[in-house]
Length: 488
Image (tube, rainbow, N blue to C red; front, side, top):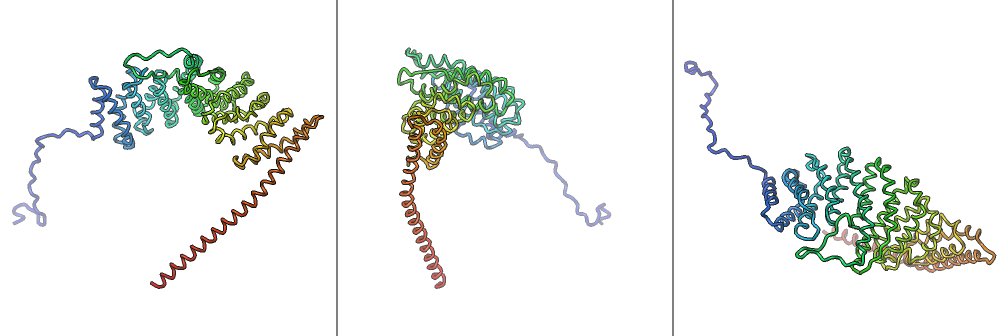
């Protein structure tokens, strides 16, 4: 029967398939939630009828939720939708001269730009170069606060996108030119900032005046370290720029300022900080380009001394960086130029300052820096100068508040001075008296070490006894635990 009906044995007939009907409604493509959210935000930022106060709140929400950048999908959505909006807002609107909502909005958007992770999403669509160009433009046009963020963006892009070296290198020289403009404006800025003439009041209804970036000491403070990093990344640009920078460094370090009112105290501290950073830049150039700096060699010791005298006593951080820069300079051939300034450097009030924080934290650095200099120029020192050195470092040997390393260094320096003192001994026997003073210092130190040694031995023995007692207690505890286990 199966054959009669045309069916093969063992094969079951397939049920007739019904024709599939098309859906009555076609659903539109659903965008990811992050894209829809970003489009809504973009529309609000582009809405000219929306007040800047509301836009500021939205920008703050984006900044505070910057962890979304760690999600590749959300980050890509931000770069495709919101990045162009923020870019155009910063590029097409005017930088602000007074504090207010508009300034805060630009500041928050720049903060968002500075937090963008250096991933493929940022590299795509030439975003890196576009962001770099924007930061370079705003660096000269913006106020102080926003310009500092621009500097951070510039150096981060250069450090994080080394694979784009060819594209980024063309923007380095324009940045170096901008830094030279900052230095060119500095004499005028100093004269204006520390003028005794009263500052004109801001227009009615405006906020506090904002310092333009071209007239900012704080912006200049950040520039030298960035220049050094860029010259390390692109070393072939150093040779064409060293002469121009050296001229501006010399001009900057020769400037003098004096605050005429208490309100100028912070500006004065920023100005000294800018000079110290510039001196650190000079120390970097001295390492490999001393020949270019020879015309200014006689001035550099004067600049160091002047900064030590001018550095605010309450600014321990600035003085520390100044001492570190001086230490690097003293490792070069310039150290012989400091012989004429040695008496000033031996004055602790000049070297360390009179601030309590400086005295407590900077003495080891100051004494070791001065000891390095004295060690190398000891043959050129006069007997009165050697006498001052012996007094200073003999006292350091007995100063229990100084680290043992500084006390040891002081003892080594005194021993190294013996030969120079012998050669400079005069008919009055002043050199011999100095040698006796050094010997007396060592004898007294040995005496104090002896008394301290017995004390240390007793303390060490007591500590060892305590350790032994603790070990015995632990053994007893272990024995008790073993007995409890046996009982169980």
